[in-house]
Image (cartoon, rainbow, N blue to C red; front, side, top):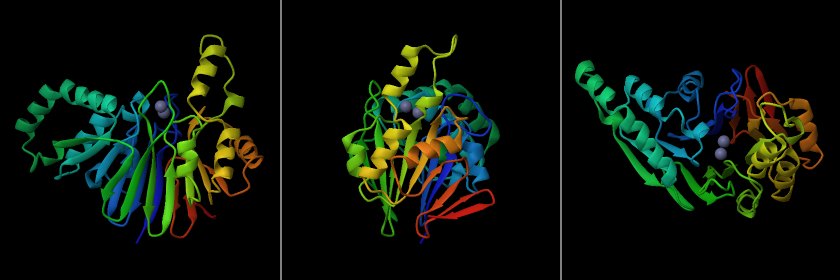
Length: 290
Ligand SMILES: [Zn+2]
Ligand SMILES: [Zn+2]
């Protein structure tokens, strides 16, 4: 039985070739769950050795464009890969309403493709939306629990707990520090935590004012706060993702984490894989035991 966490996109709305938009994959036995569908997700899925066609479900944690921008691209590319089963998509009402708008905006185009291209099945274009609420989602091989986090004014927004093979993975989603996350993360084998590197996000004329920085920071988590959460929850390992800014200095970031958390910590990179069973992180040619 495998239980793996794969970073597909560790970035944010700021564009950089090294970090695609927010998207992460959980593989538990035969079940593959995609978390969010940020920019570049379909390409990264192929790089990670899988395909949209093979996914069992998509969970979109909240309605922010960077988490849902490639939704229709995911649906169409998966169909072209031969997807022959309907989609299960769980998300918040505002994000579902938005995904329905993406579908509607291409309705005329997809109708033309269907009649002209004569693909073997259109089942991969069928999407069953379900509202994401705090509580359990049932899948074979993995138990998923959604918990409400604090990403106000964006609400609702969720973090996710995945339990499989006696291991616990907690994904923060986008959030400011909150009790629900700290509770969910208790004794997790791996906490995947979003981070806003405040030290590197200074006001910049024409780009962001002091007010912008304060507003954005208010609904995210700084390195010191991330370290505090990991330490209080006594997580076994910490991985950082949703790196703002995406070019944040890794060594300096880890140093800030180490000031408040003594366990193993890694800065997530696109295509990094965390094997929860063997407690191994693989990134390119590098393998680290945690
Ligand atoms: Zn985000
Ligand atoms: Zn967000």
